[in-house]
Length: 551
Image (tube, helix red, strand yellow):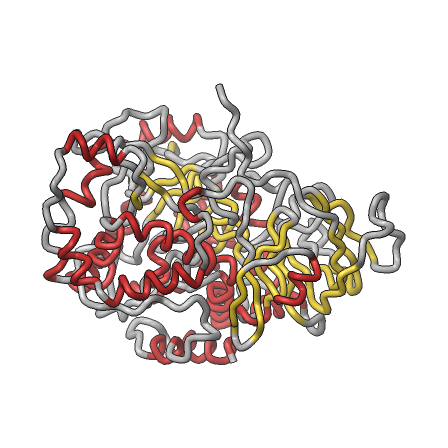
């Protein structure tokens, strides 16, 4: 059997970064003036700047960042393809995810546009390039991936430079997580528990998304009987917004954890998880953006929202605990704590550098804007940052402006996905901007019968990849190789993969309208905070707090 190249080849130059170092290690050590030494993807040394250089680094130039060095940010909940769409002005307060998913305006503003884009294969590369660059520019070094499917029903993940928790090709060090979007029905709880017991890694399950009794029943459905629950240490519940204090105690007692997406919860439901009860119960907590249409543009914004809510409710979390939710704690939920999540010797060189080294280091990251990120490094390779700093480190790529500052994006990779080879962010952005402005025409094109037989289309489509839109279509994304190859309803995975073309695009042109592409950053979007002010479900505390933190 041929061996696949690892997604992160251990090949990066010797680099020495000097600055304040926020290690996020078990002792919460902060080195006021430190140096981080990296080579071949790993952190070789973390020490005071005055200490002798480790072996082999005697002649390596020191790069003085003038900033604060943190571990890379880990986003455990993000439906990335949707991040091309602008923020939705949520028309009412919903009680659970089943309600907004059936709303006509949601269909016209989100699901129909995404189905149109998914039915246009020539846009796939641009979507992948744009949303990954958007994550990088916001400091994300690890996140949920982009699922692709072809006409044969084969699925794979887009291979970019941001670490993908579901596909690592490095099971020994970075065991892949599993993902499930639909809730678990009570009749399937025992089967689900059997599956969970086989899981040795993180299982990310959308759990009780919403605030009403219906949303809570999704958690209660995990009860098999008495004290027996379909919960194991592998289970990580995304949202868990409807859980009450006793529910969090059950989750913690069975070793479960959660991903908190407060901004999306507030926008859709006007409320979020009882996070104080979750903390009191001892539930491990991470943060996730969810998606741009009703969530945060990046983890920098999600950190801000979490901080505002925490402070408004009696300072539930310290700033250090919040930063841990996107670094050390997230790595722990994945079972990756030996490899990422802190700045320590032997771990992967996933780092970000925020300009400046004064004041509380944890507050500094919470207040950071995209234009404050001087460097985003993955596996010892600078992927985004200050243009002059990137050149000094030996990385040359596409230049762009972020908040008026000169930045550079470096996406070349020895194992890069052929989909995006030689595609620039600028080219992807231009193509998507035109496509979104012309959505009705694009939808009409997708609806036209194609002059090709199904058999010929299937043969030709074996190498034609499309988006597998787990939030809209029954793609079987929660199914793994060891489960039946048929999705609910008896359709084969192949049939499910073909649904975007044959079933869901028939009347898209009647409902879609021209849209603007969602901006890469908050700092370059003059209307973003005004758009938040118009959101009916978001309390003034968050609106005012975000204006302060983004100012």
